[in-house]
Amino acid sequence: MSDVESAVGRITPRQFHQAAGVEDWRVLGDGAVAFFRTESFAVGARFAQAIGELDGLAEQHPAVDLRSEGVTVRLVTCTDEVFGMTGREVDSARRISAVASELGLVADPSVLKTVQVTVDALAGPEVVEFWRVLLGYRHRAGSPEDLVDPQGRGAPFFFQQLDEPRPQRNRVHVDVWLPQDQAEARVAAAIAAGGRLVTDEFAPSHWVLADPEGNEACVGTCGWTGPEPTGRAV
Image (cartoon, rainbow, N blue to C red):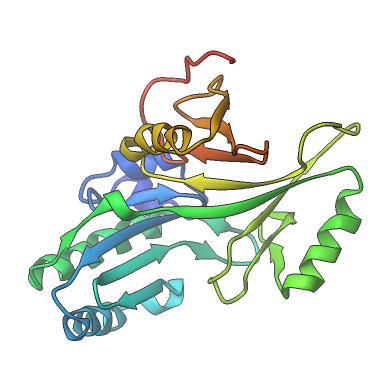
């Protein structure tokens, strides 16, 4: 058993992607995600049932989204201490991919994404509490200043502490996490659709874009495994 597989604490996206047998999966946000195309809803239902019958997997509470065109599976460890990935996600990803292979299902990473809402705040705790009550969310294990949907359906909320007011820029924006081989094309498409590039200083880790009225969004590759960012500010 490798060090990654036996890890009980958090592992990095790079560690996950360097493990063998997880080629179907991409790290987006806090967890590993895969989408398997199916020829019908019934085939997808059989796949979901087979996932549910895997020994020990129920303890990880995998999020399985069943649609007529395919099945999306998200793996994330959620305890009082950890909200993210451990070595268990590597093992579970391999086992789920094996089940998919037995059913003749093929993964399609090109459709994967994770959306997160980021709020820049001066009065952090007060702002967090407002959004927690409004959304019915709970504090995120490991970083209780952030919020997650207890049902695992809604976008997580991430709060960035400001040291001073930031005029002339919006303080709420959307983060879109994509597979690293899809991000640059999505950035180009968004710019072609009327957006503009605010900065690519941290690319290919992430790009900051704005819509025609200046509302910002970030396109990120949480699972980036290539060289360190070498982009430039614009």
